[in-house]
Image (tube, rainbow, N blue to C red; front, side, top):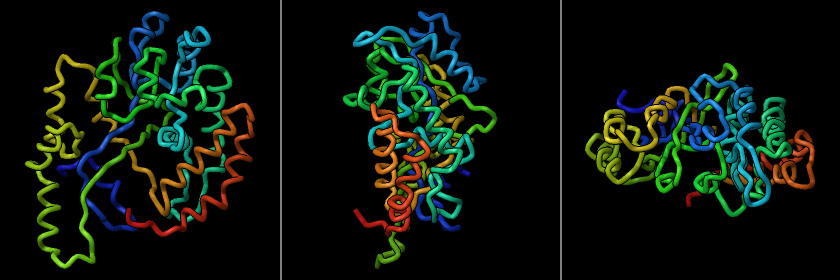
Length: 304
């Protein structure tokens, strides 16, 4: 009970707890308040549906070339599909089935989610990966040329922004879910000093160590320590910092299995052909990598 449930679940697999969490983040909406006010668009208030999001994008997107202001970015990440998975989950789908044995992203929920993202690109509301190749979403947002991005709840990326910004819950159409990601500590079954190893893991999982991690700048998963950020952050952006913690109540971890990083890369690289000038069909693109992803799902993880 001392930890956010989403972070505990991040290390559960096949009914077993494989590690204890150290820090965790949710994924929320970060937005440029100045661009909203300039465009005369009401600020997101936590009640937005995706139709409200799209309506705002039309008004927030303006200009062309180097002066263009994008309504949104971040749903496309070179090499990864962290944030776009949230849209898949909200549609009721996932990369893999419930027991993590088979690729399922080419089923209807995945096709719907990636068609939606591709529409943002084709309508000019969202840069393609090529257009944003030199900037990750946070850096691109910090230039002041993007109105909204999905982002995990670490705000040091925006500390030097020259504009007013804040955070809000992501829109949803009834199924509110977002992504959390955690780091943690574990002990190996092959160890010869299990009692000592457990004492170390237990210490790292306790309040004193968590306070040290927090003071170092990590968004720790120990509730009482993490929630002190609400008072320590008073007067500093984001004003709505509590939303990042509240979002953990409905956040879920990725269904990590096999060679998970390569699965991300395979999906993201394939989708480049959808967003780019080739304009490949979403369904055929997602189905075309099924065999490769299934092989990666079955791969045995290797120690780094």
